[in-house]
Image (cartoon, rainbow, N blue to C red; front, side):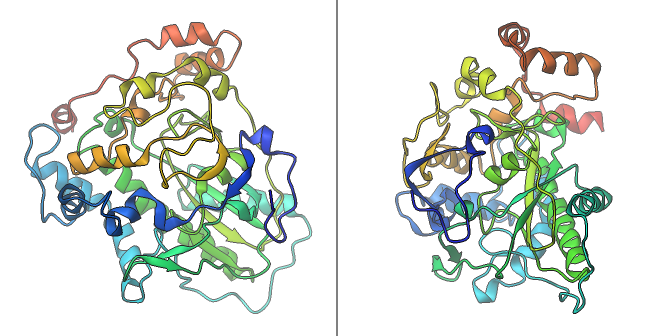
Length: 389
């Protein structure tokens, strides 16, 4: 393959679980399922329009437990801070945090703090990230393969230039834990509050950490779903391992995380990818694929097959059918994370017996762990969540 400018060929890809083939092409953001629902008539339907409208309470269905007006009200309220940030540049065709990076609210200090020890500075950044509320933080190199080939101008959904300041060297990846009790109620509009809350949290956190770095005199571009694919960066930063359900499994929170990122030229030591044994477990586990209502998740080994244009070309991995997945979201008028809920790694690892299970699952005794996980992740009634509070 042709490696992007200033990106040397890497020998750590196999360790990171990222298998790039010779026909690799950077992903065009206009082709993700959410963007296609705005311009592609093969994806856009009255149901997808109603899906987006439900986040404005313009088309909130009343379909029983988990889909009442209260459920939609909480879900939509949880998105508020993220929405405020993403809408502030709408007139310029920039949906910040989704189709464009988050604009800097503070300038880069004219005088840069001298950094003699990148390892010490990386530790400091992680401490600051934790101070602002991040649950995980890792640092990896600025691997331009995972940048979008182009971003989206939301005024007409056309392709727009996707550029970052020159001289970027690192990507700081932040993890934000989703509420376990809400995740247990997927699929429901109520469960969507677990997603929305973390988007609002990560918007605030990633902006604050980026502002701290700019105040030190270095470039820092805050990013959520925009600019590049966050999962490869999270894996390369040592936060977890990629799984069959398309999520990053972490030893602290399993798959129950949202990720944000910061592109920077602050001198930082990079973390190493840490293969845990998740790949070997997923090889024998199909809980997520079995549970998917529309069979959007793959069985069998990782593959470089593209179900449609919403999948990246030239990466051998487990790949979902995003059209089927988003079609089910549209039917629900809310997001679905059944695959997260039923994942055997979706546990509270503050409890000793779940930590014991994790150790077993990541060992050669993984088949025993799989048997112990039978019936794991059953759905809880959303109405029980309301009563419990």
